Length: 123
Image (cartoon, rainbow, N blue to C red; front, top):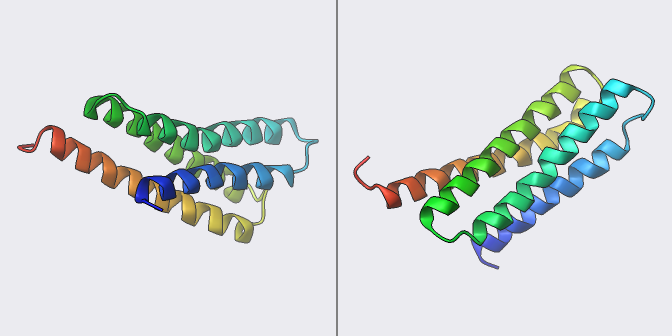
């Protein structure tokens, strides 16, 4: 399996893992429902936007789509931190999600740098 397919799988899996984690959060708290909806939206968006980037029409289009992936990944980390800092979810259960999300973010940021250097090698 090539790197692009591996990243597709990982970005889809992080969305699924977040959806499963949110399923364990008690539904009675209106604020937690809002946080749950936000984290599901952005975590699922990581994979959908990465897939869109893979179908980009140009390097510039690819770069713009990767920047969206970066934003959604960073937002997912933010919501994971909110859940952890608020003691809404056991921090041990979040450790693996945060680790994987950080790894995906690092891959995306490195890809953005590579594409930027390819588009404009002198900067």
